[in-house]
Image 1 (cartoon, rainbow, N blue to C red):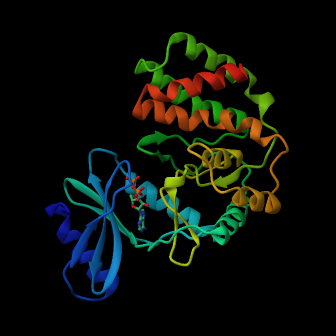
Image 2 (image 1 turned 60 degrees about the vertical axis):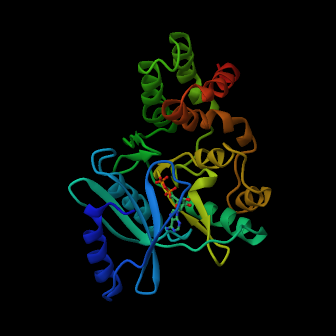
Image 3 (image 1 turned 30 degrees about the horizontal axis):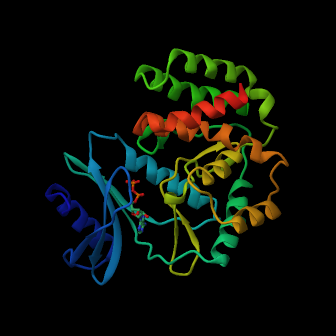
Length: 293
Ligand code: ADP
């Protein structure tokens, strides 16, 4: 199942990492991802996690993912899988990681997750953005530095995706004009916050609950941003357990009216979905535009 062109690269990586000579004993496909192929590999009595895709499809995607995971890991708050190797053949690229065995989230899991995300967000900076661009899902994400959150949110998050949606005829001229109106008002909606280090794509598919019931973050789209972006994203498809929000708030209280901005923040992931998956996300975008403009 692993593309033949990659097998040699992966075997030599595993030999180096494990210090043991073996062959790939099993490769069990793992579903659930939306972009790449993934499997659990068995080598010298241990498991590893492998993802791959064609080189040409998403240039430097795994390099950028590894960078994001390293940045998150350096914050020393939430667990992050160890990136063991990234590499490519002429046609395929791969990322090899520590395999995370999983269990079901319990109360303690949500408490720890709430506290650790608050700790992650306590890592602040004096500007918004990051030192490299990355991906959100499979769309490029610009992290050009800005001094002010409203500028960053408009210029690097909304404008590029509204343009993409307009170019792809996914939104009308009228809807694009509503966004223009929204941009002039954004300033008044967000209370000032220091730029916080964000996971950047914190929906329920991007964390794991490990065998010790502790949270592990995967698939980051990291940048320094307004922390309500991460919190809002957790609410996009159903929301996390209420304990998570209670504990987060105890450790790093949110503004009293943060809930009013959930839909505003989520315009960004909704635009991502609109551009990637189509018009079923348009009505939620319209409702938000009508509310804020
Ligand atoms: P994609 O890049 O296509 O979105 P994901 O990173 O979401 O793929 O991974 C695909 C599947 O593998 C998901 O079900 C995810 O939960 C699981 N997964 C991701 N990283 C690991 C890991 N280090 N160990 C075990 N399972 C993982």
